[in-house]
Image (cartoon, rainbow, N blue to C red):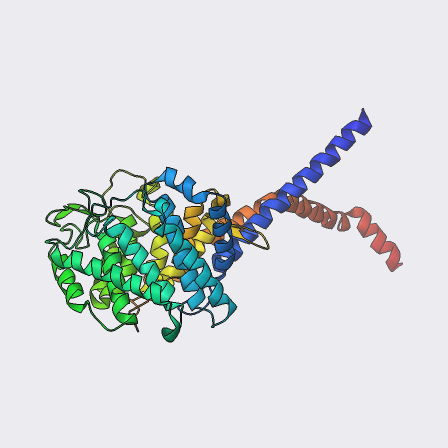
Length: 441
């Protein structure tokens, strides 16, 4: 029995030791992720994005698009569109060669999936333009990105014709509409969708002789007359007939609007971005920066776009705001958001791939990869806003990691100190005095 009890004690000691090592290693990893650069800036390769895109592509091959469609109405569409757009941006950050050729192949593959029946399935062919402004705007933006990856004199003629035709259809729909916000679904309009479409017209005029400056100018004038009165921002939802604000500006749509508006009108976008940052970016519980779904001081219901709203924060809006911050040159906020996601997103890496939240929601990985590769496609020399985040935002989390990492060793450290003090007292006791006296004689 004594031998068995001793073996059990030894196993228990080893289990405790391994658990202590594991906890300390996790704290050390968290510390590294919190301080290591997590963005690539305007020109560099964002760390880990290529591995993330490898995971997303493998997930798409395994049917992740159909699974995402079960989560929200544009799940299939968004997963393919964001994958294609992130590939475009990744390719543009690299030199001509195999990297850009691969990016072009992958972006074309994603665009082909959107051009198929499965990509158009949620949308109505009866809308103007056909399939609605959401479908036509995002596909036109991606198609323009595919053309950007090709040298001007060697662009595929069929792709050029399609991009020009779709741009003309969008411009005609805006020119004929009494409202700047076209319908994405029958009887429903979201300003973010029209913002993407108008950005694609700006992209057309950057790639080819300008044709839609007046259309864009009229759109901007109409938008300024229909801002959300509570925030001064583009509203989340608008009346499909008049364009009047129908719902207060919300983080999920604003984070995307700010990403695209900079390519439509940099000056107006800079004003809108600061309004958004001041009212929606917060530090929940004093930790890292996050983005509220509703303006600070107000609350509202969660939905499929926002996801759960703990403390009023939308995780999806937080991820997409990373891209908006990068597009506006707000390096301090973009870096802080990216580093916080590296900690809170629980990334898991292999030699071939990287995924967040254990890879349970691939569309989240697609949004993050798209956000980390963000920068303006049309606007040039966008002035950076005044920084709103200092490096001290990490202090609470670094302190937490230090405490957690040291906690498993506290008991052992206390025992060691006690033994050391006991040894010192023994060295200074009566026996030690007699021994020193004997040596002296």
